[in-house]
Amino acid sequence: MNHGHHGNGQGHPETFDEVIARGFPHEHLDALRKANETRVRGVTAPKWTRGAAAAAPVVARKDASSTFTTVEQTAFKNAIVRLVEEGKYQELVGHHMDMSHNMHGSMGEVGLYRFLGWHRRYLVEFERELQRVDKILRPTATEKLGVPYWRWQDPFPAWLSGFLPCPDPNSGSSPPPRKNASPPSKANAADIGIILNQFAIQDTGLSGENDYTKFTYGLEGWGLRPNGTGLPAHNHGHAWAGGIMNNTSVSPTDPVFWLHHAEVDRLWQIWRQTHPAPGPVLTGSDRIMDPWSESYDDLLDISVLGYSYDSMAI
Image (cartoon, rainbow, N blue to C red; front, side, top):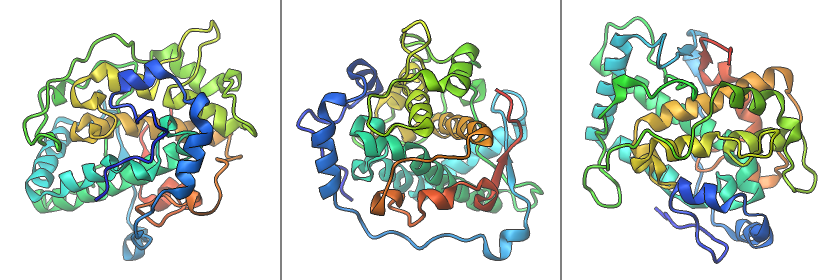
């Protein structure tokens, strides 16, 4: 697997601290655009369909700090341990290590536009593997196990404290402990309100920007508050957690990655209820969320993907 990045000569930031410090790469957009045009895409997997399971109820993703039960917490951790033992977890981390997928705004315009769709498909892949092994471990369970979401304004989920069962893919050793502290500050409730309801204030500096561009720009972590200070969001949550979560490449090694991105996905879903269009300015193969074959358009109906959220309140 190619874990390299077709960069801009500056190199892709290794940590989210660096991502935040550098800001959106406006000065390198031309180089990043050319790099994307020449990036090598691997063979994509066939589209997944629910098939015979289409009539089955969708799984409700739950609040990690309130509605995700202790039984589910244990099941979630046991399933991840099983995936690590199989080597499947490390395979999942490998998808994120392959920066040729161009799925972050630090990679330029196309990365910004692909950020939400790519990570939604990534979460679905993880959730399906989670459910597969959970069915083995809990054959009599009556409810599917879903990925819980971590509301950024809440404390770190205590039940995940110290739980880092996957080795660092780069060193093979145990990951460093989390920091779970500022700086940077993670988003508070007021920040979430700005991301969702005041996205129009964001000045992305990108030609042809639309509502989707401005919303994604703020949600990924490039935005400003109305007073001109930085708007904490996705990038800041990674850096706040620290440890291996602060690594832009191997952050999924930390299981809280999935909870963090479930909240990204939930906030996107909340926003889409009132802003179903327009979408990202993506064309051709950039619209396909490689290494999977689903396009951005295939990923908009989450019920088709097999999940919902137990709350759409911010």
